[in-house]
Image (tube, rainbow, N blue to C red; front, top):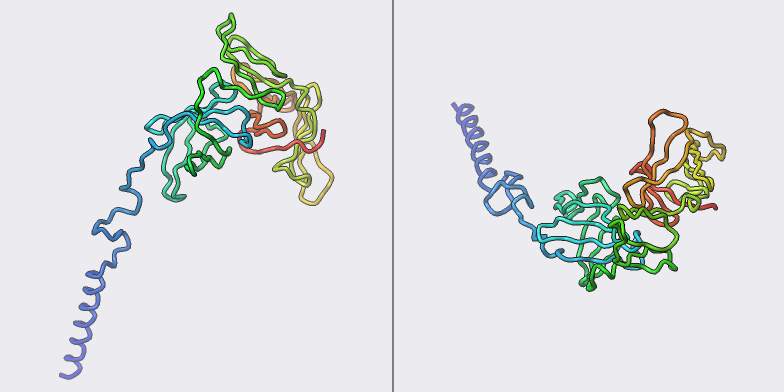
Length: 270
């Protein structure tokens, strides 16, 4: 009889403890408001705080760049007055940040956006200040290596540019002269990188790979670098080894480019 009573008490005590734990909010999905909605999921973020036109500062990764936001977070990104990317803003709960989402898979994709003391920062390119001029003011001094956009239309309906750039007046497409890419470009600005590219003055290129710590490298591919017909600052490295293989090359700065929308190479030898 005593054993049955003891067993009954143990079972009753166990059930009572389970009931108390549930009543105290043992559900990990409760955010403290009595709801099972995960944190941030029901939060509305006011993207209109970024609305306006912002101009990249002197230290921005892109020369003469402008980014324009509307009240819903949609944006347009210009370089030298030419539209090169577009997309929208989206809150990323994992990073707890508002991030750039590009519809073209551009280089600023994924950058977190912040407002700091009246300045806009995007960590994939740099800082922006409020642009208080007009479209005719979208220019940068070519003597300092930037693009110049003077707002004037030419006879073909495009914009006039000056400086050391090729220009297609029909579409406002501009490129650096291919000879200006001559040099040795290393992955991630590292002379000991396992990948590097050698480009000659005529645009001929060779892609090399080596094992870590080994100075000897093997040529994996080669071909010719050509400007894009309809994208400013974009080139295509056409392979002479593999049929129909071409790598997209996006010029980030005078000595930096993005290879195949994935790898960043820096010119460390001329």
